[in-house]
Each structure stands twice: as C-alpha cells, then as structure tokens.
Length: 109
Image (cartoon, rainbow, N blue to C red; front, side, top):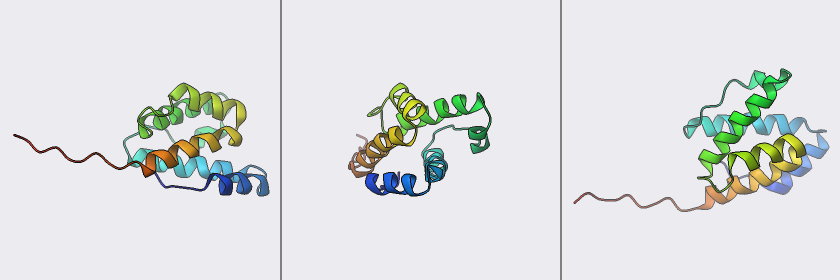
C-alpha cells in the first residue's frame, strides 16, 4: 500500500468537501486488488444499499492488506459511521503496514 499522510488526507477531504474521500477509496481499492483483495467495481459506491455491501468488501480487503492489524469489522464500522474521519484511522494502519519490513524468504532444507 502506498504510504499517505493522514493530515494531508484530512485537509484534502475538508477542502474538497469530502470528494477526495471518494478518490481515496478508489485508489486504495485498486491497491488492495493488486495485493490480492477481491473488491467489486467502484460504481457500487453510488448505488443505495449496494454501497454498504461494497464498503464491507472493501473492509475485508483492509483486513487482508494490514494482515489483521485492523479487523474488517473495525474498518467497516469506522468508515460506515464516521465516513472520511474513520478512514483517516484506516490510512494510519495502511501506513503502518507499508513501513513494516517484509519477512525474509525462508530457504528450504
């Protein structure tokens, strides 16, 4: 996942009246798909009731990408009820996951 400044995310969401939040959701969706998450098309964000299901699938991707550092339920509830403010917490977890050193490859015996 790309490391992004949480403060920059918050400022951009405020300046754009939340439109940047949608851009961020799309970008993070694409990055999580590249890492193996299965998230449906972004168009579902704009369809009532389908957007809740899409947000759940996105949250499952968060759980996968952060290696369970942020559970799917926590990510889902934060973003569903707090909107872009909750997503700032998710971005902080993305940043933590991005800075973790990858595990050294194991050599066979």
